[in-house]
View 1 (cartoon, rainbow, N blue to C red):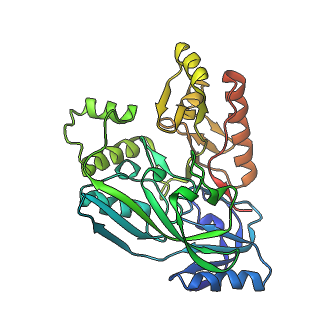
View 2: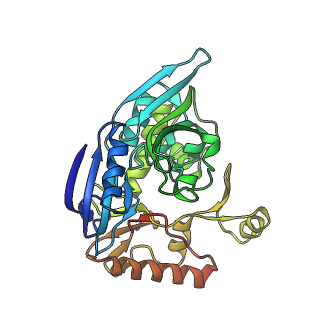
Length: 337
């Protein structure tokens, strides 16, 4: 376990904003978890668990508490007789490294989640998803440290209350469980068609005929590289706004009006990026943030130095989209408070 002091949050998050965190603790083995929380408890300090920093925003005043980061590594793939596989990954693993490892084994289930930044431990917290797949479809269980009674537990996926970008881990039980590891059930095979619209377009444009997991990973990686800035080099927080969901009746009305409504397993979705584009905001620079031209859900920090700049840009986008379409956009990244 490593304990660091006065670490700039801007250096730990991909939006590159935020003052110093009083303490940062890096957990290197499961037994470090209770020690880290005891450290915070003894000093009467709040705790915030930070993953890869790509979906997280810091404030100018920093964080007068303890940031805990999972650095526990390890991936184990157990093939089953029925063609499925149980994939056990420690929470500190880079998510995309896990996707790569499963695709190399010909396993389907998370290949469309390629190149999503962050860690394995963070993935079930907000039920990450892309191109028609999400974590809730394949997660079997998670291993956690329960801060409520200082015990180690295993929680089944059915107990996590999964919904769009949501679980009990970021809602009703936020802050209670520290995710040490996750187990996924994948299978040998391919994704079922039809695929997500932009993936089908890529397939048609490039005359693709191979849909094995590794091929889908390659395609998704190419699509993301074309339209999404790499947060390691270009400051952003990934998708900044959640997509808009509507009921079936409203979806029918919107489709009749020409809105691109995607009907998926999780409901009827309108891409918020499309709404931002149609509101004329693509490429606009607002308070130091540029709305990405190829993926308007992404805000790029070009010159902003404060959270106040971000809040102003966010509000301007929300107001303009609401005035034009009547939909109120919701922020996706969490904030260190």
